[in-house]
Image 1 (tube, rainbow, N blue to C red):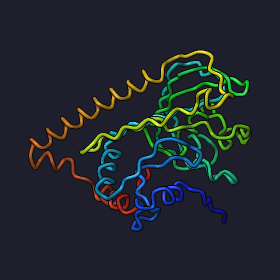
Image 2: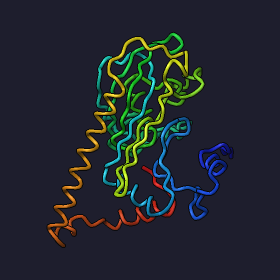
Image 3: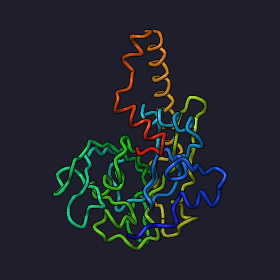
Image 4: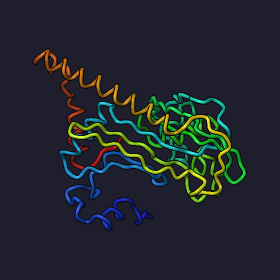
Length: 269
């Protein structure tokens, strides 16, 4: 069986050997995942305490993630909520893929939601494309790629979900741009520089701006702050209620086991 040797963990071990943790399976405590061909921001915890703080934020849905992508065609709506349920594709030759509910061979589809905001219309190598900001509100495998393909606008360079046709670009045009994790001790907020600019890739030629990226990110920041304030108020109310209130927030046995497993290795969203 073939295994990729140039992985994120191998590069981290080479660049930051002093941060590697031999007690973990992957050598580092990754707080979430990115697809192999996706660039951008990724959070790595340096110890169990930090991992626990990040896990709590993910579990309580306080984390804000936003991706940039170039998708095929010109998306007509300025904003879209995509809600196709996603499951594993069990069709022979496609078991490495996910699919939307109703697809032949789709197994165990689960509810999923992604938000799409159009930023710019333009062209890539002469073909019409749209630059969009994508926000996954759930964390299914390949969710953004499957959802974009399902609405007829596959991500540029996504060979897998373009019916094995889109093989010309040098990479898949999906980038984890913004990550916000409000841990108890600090606010982790990162923007990984936008790679989809003409100065970095002359094949991308923007033609008109629908919404400014800075404005959209500020909107997400404001929503994140509001959500954090609501969660803080909820926790304060629970503390005031005393034991009864605390009891209503106790984790189930399944949640406890999942948490322990996550802290032992790493988190799968």
